[in-house]
Amino acid sequence: MNKPITIPMRAGIASRQAHADLPPGTYEREIGREGFSGQATHMYHLHAPTAWLRWDGPHRPRAYDLNRMDTAASGLMNCPLDAPLVASNQHMRLRCWKTEEPMSHLARNADGDELIFLHAGGGHLYCDYGHLLLRDGDYLLLPRGTAWRFEPTSSSFLLLIEATGDSFQLPDRGMLGEHALFDPAVLDVPQLDAEFIGQQNNAASSREWAVRIQARHRVSTLVYPHNPLDAVGWKGTLAPVRLNWRDIRPVLSARYHVPPSAHTTFLTQRMAICTFCPRPAETDPGALKVPFFHSNDDYDELLFLHSGQFFSRDGMGPGMFTFHPAGFPHGPHPTAYRTSLTNPRTEFHEVAINIDLRDPLDIAPGMSSCERTSHADSWNGYLDRADHQLGQVVA
Ligand SMILES: [Fe+2]
Image (cartoon, rainbow, N blue to C red):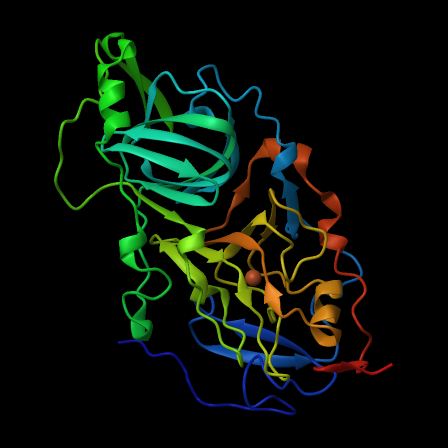
C-alpha cells in the first residue's frame, strides 16, 4: 500500500501553529494536498503571494456578476433545462435561472442530481413526491430523474448545480457527531399536502402535460394526456430534501481559523459545496481572521456571494461569483487583510457558497458579457515588507 512521505520538517522562522501567531511581518501560504485535509506545509513570506505586478496567460482569477447575466434568450418554455450555462466540467454543470412565470410543464434531469440554490425570490415546488414552499436561501436537492415544476411567488433567481453522472451526499461529521452543522431533522421533504392534492384536481390536471427530460445533455419531451404529478402515496429512502442556510450552525473556533472544508454541506465524488454562514470572528489576538494564502492545487474554486460583504474579498456584492483556478495563488484582498490586522470584525454576516471542483472548470463562452475583467488586478495595495504584524500595524 502506498504511503505519503510524512517526515516532520522545518526550516527558518515558522509559526508553531498554522494560521496563528505568524512570525511578525510575514504572510502565511499553505501548500497542501486534498484541499485542506491532506499533507501540508506552511510558508512564511515577506510579501503577499498575490501581490503580483502583472498577469499574463489563459488562467487567471476571474469575477462575474450574475445580476448582469442576460437570460432573456434562455429558451422557449421557461424551462430550467434551458437556463444558460455558467460553468461546467465533465462532473458538474452550473446554470443560472431567472424566472417570474409558473412552469406549465415538468422538467426531469436524468444526467445527475440537481442541487438548486434559491438566491432570490421564492415559490411553490411541485414534484413527483409532493409540494414544498421554497424561500430565499434554500438549497433543494432533487434526486436524478425527479420530475418537477416551479411556480414562483416573486421574481426568482436560482442556481442549478448538476452533479453530472453523480449524486449529492452529506459529509461525515466525524468527531462532531451526527447532529453538528445541522440536525438531519431540519431537512424538509415534499409533502402530499392540500396544495399538491389541489393541483391534481384542478382544471389543468386533465390537459396535456409535457415532461421535458434531459439525458446526455439533450432534451426530449414526453407528452401525457393527464398530469403526471398524480401520486397518492410513496415510501422509501430517496426523496428531494430542502435545507436553508439559516438552519446551518457553522463550526468555528475562537483561536483557530477553520478552513473552508469545515463548512462542507454537500459532497459528490468530484465536488464539494461549502456554505459560509454568519458567525462570530476569531477572538484570539494571534489567530488569523481571514483565510491564509493558498493555491488550492487540487481544486478549482467558485465562490458565489448570496448576501452581505464577503469577509476576505474587496468589491464583491451579492449575485457575484469569483473563479479561482487551481494552481494560482489567492487569498484575502488587501483591504480585507489590512482590516483583519488593524480593526478586525467581530462578526461575519455574509452568506456565500463555495463550489470546489476536482476537475478543471470551463467558464461558459457567454459569460464574458458579465465578467469583471479587472479582478486579476484587484490585489494591489498590501502592506509593504515587514510593515505589519498580527494585532498591530507598524506606522
Ligand atoms: Fe481558496
